[in-house]
Amino acid sequence: MNSVLKRARSLPICAIIKATFERTATWFVERGVKVDSMLRAGHQYTKEINAIIRKNQQQVGMCQVRRYSKENNEFQVQEMFSPHDHRLPISFTVRLNDWWCDCGHFQALRLPCHHVITVCSFSHIDLTSYIHPVYSL
Ligand SMILES: [Zn+2]
Image 1 (cartoon, helix red, strand yellow):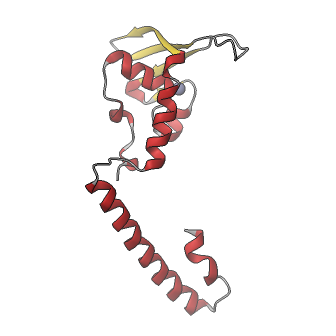
Image 2 (tube, helix red, strand yellow):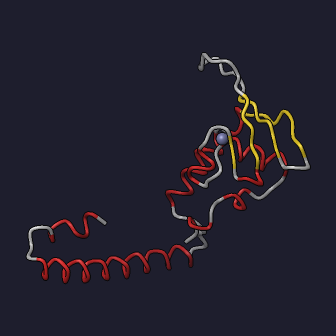
Image 3 (spheres, protein in one colour):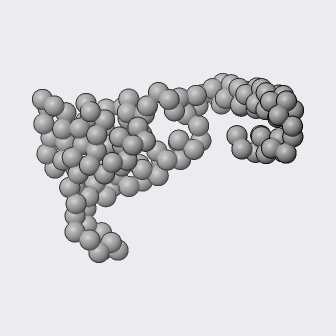
């Protein structure tokens, strides 16, 4: 958005308003065309969101569900010790009903972290259920 408005800063106020309106309108049309083509290609999310999910999925092999409670959908996920990573295994609590993980990424971004993806895989839950609708195209 900053690049759209970049050259308008040095203009008089009426010209800034007019330039902002025209450039923003053009930008929305361009974004609309881009999103429309992605939807027609069958995409549900932007490539940036898909890249984040893919990166988190690659870390699932380092995690294991240790305990879970069916009543409140609460899971204990343990990160496995890696010989390259000199720290002890850490356990994280994931509460799917509350969109909560101890790592903080899940509730901050409203995107599943690798702990949540581990839980979804363990429970055979579609992980797209835990991608906030704001990220949909
Ligand atoms: Zn997490």
